[in-house]
Image (cartoon, rainbow, N blue to C red):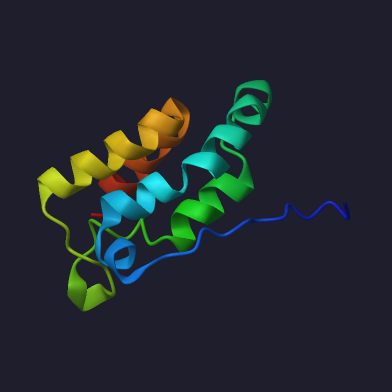
Amino acid sequence: MSGQARLIRPAYTRAVIDDPVARARSLAPILREASAEADRERRLPERAARAMAEAGLYRLSVAEQFGGDAADPATLVRTIEAVSQADSAAGWNLMIGLETAG
């Protein structure tokens, strides 16, 4: 590989696109695969952060007028929980990102 991480994007159905928790769950294979590297390198691998960003997870707490989803608190918690089930460090990263962005 040329130093560039290859991102495998999950296929989204309309129901998944409309549901941030489902989008988070669809990232589980990517997040689990990156988990060992995260532990070893002591940081979230770029491919995991990029996958969460491309799935729109970091903008869930941003107001709609600024391009976010303005998700309610319960949806934020359920989304963080779904990510954390795949990788707890990724869930922590998402929680910090949502608190900072919102």
